[in-house]
Image 1 (cartoon, protein in one colour):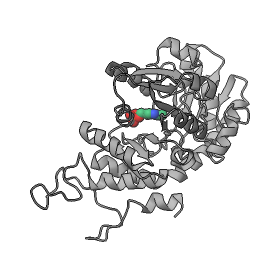
Image 2 (spheres, protein in one colour):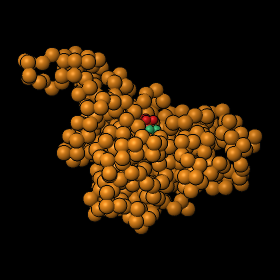
Image 3 (cartoon, rainbow, N blue to C red):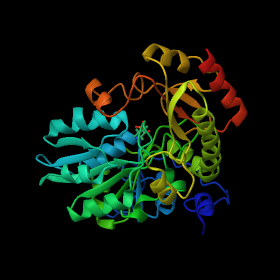
Image 4 (cartoon, helix red, strand yellow):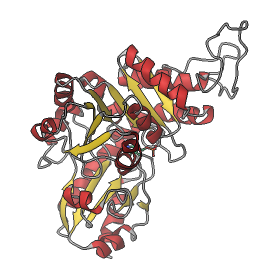
Length: 380
Ligand SMILES: *Cc1c(COP(=O)(O)O)cnc(C)c1O
């Protein structure tokens, strides 16, 4: 079955007892066992829940994995991966990563005696030079956040495995509709399901998907032991969102590409960061890795300081001033003040997250309405 068909049918089998075409939401926290010390398919909802299981089956199918785990947030999913490591190990992460991942690695994970450093994942030589004997995990994000850098996942997988590291990819921006990291050799795919997978700004969730059953078992053990699982109601919402994932992402990407063209032609805009533009440094890799559809996130830099930029992001009407992304409603934000405020100022400067940078999450609204909204905000 093709992607779109699997998104609708895998993990969504009709309910045999009623014939309902949508599986019921199983709210039970505990399940009757066949006997003392005997275990059925489910026993306790932290360890496994039918509604969560359905979602995990859909996700595993869409990413081409052997199994998936659904978490209460993207950060919980990321944290679970870091708990595979021990004191003395080192994590190497790309420098263009989600602000919350930066904070988790530098302010929580490092307390467990796990060292963390950043290197640009778009530059394989610098990335390789940053690998240490104690490095165990390479963490990358593509497209990166907020600069839309494109990392060559297949090349990173080759590098990681040559050095005996696990490669984990935060694929929140790309979604399995555009990029499937496991097929490119990655070991772990992570998603903030809060974004495109849910798609409607009404659920918080996260996911991990893997191709290797042994790795699945290790992650499952950590998830069950630490407990940040996704609730049945929220699992249902993400399952519902997945059915329209490909349609939404394709259409939102089309509008994003048109807005990128529009912004690139506006004299008040210094540069537009969108992997679909031929002058984007990651364009060629993106053509190969994203199948010619470049996602619905874009950033641009205006000719202006912190306050001017603040005025622009506060002036749009359809683009709502908010962090998060990936939903049907368009959002605008200033990374230096919002999504990436948890970076140290020096790291922000070193990685090019300047005050004049504006990030857009392009939703499902009409292109002309969104373009006029941006034009009016720049005029203001
Ligand atoms: C939002 C986000 C996260 C964190 O996910 P939560 O669901 O907010 O915990 C991680 N990575 C990326 C790229 C994100 O956009």
